[in-house]
Amino acid sequence: SAVGVAAGGAGYGAASGSGQAGGGGGGGALAYKNSISVTASQTWTIVVGAQGTSTGQNASRGGHTQLKNPSSTIVLEAEGGYPGAAASGGSGGPRTTSDGGGDGGSGGGGSSSGPNYWPAGGGGAAGYAGNGGAGANSSSNGTSSSAAPSGGGSSGGSSGYGLTGGPGGGGTGLYGQGSSGGAASYLSGGKGGSIDTNGATDAQGENGSSYNSEGGGAATGGRGGHPGGGGG
Image (cartoon, rainbow, N blue to C red; front, side, top):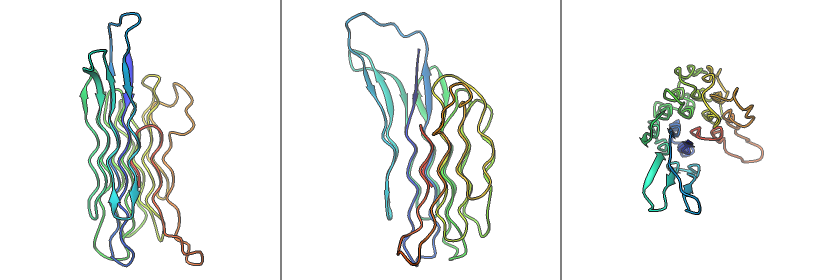
């Protein structure tokens, strides 16, 4: 058997003074495949999707995770989450070749309604029998995310607040289905799913960082939890 989790998409970085709050990146899919026949001495290829990146208004999609047989046929594939946009969240990545799993959660929707709207959260990585949780939408006050659906997936990140970037979505553990990620209070990254089966410590999405007026640093969104969380 094999399990693959794709990478999450990046959140959108709104331009300074634009009045926009960028959308969160979508979470990566999870796919698993049972009863894979292998032959000794043959070479199989594992492709691990890279996390989406964001530089200003240039946000990228998360990479796909694949398992290929010796003939280069894809026997397992989980697709990466889509990046956030100026006023909308990225879609979660779908599972395309598998016996089961789930799709990534969508990133929270951004807003162009003015400077009092804060950045959205990233989507959570998918679970073994359900999709990842959605990131919280941009709002004019702090907004929590909902818990992930049943099936061992991760919850999305809450919204940012004030001059703080949006939090990332949670990542999903690789060692079998466990508990789904719970709701994240505002300013908090999404909670990891299925981490009780292996004690993963890096599955929670990161919180966004604050704007530093003295040092000139911009507010930045948090990275998604590993593996598969979408960026804030």
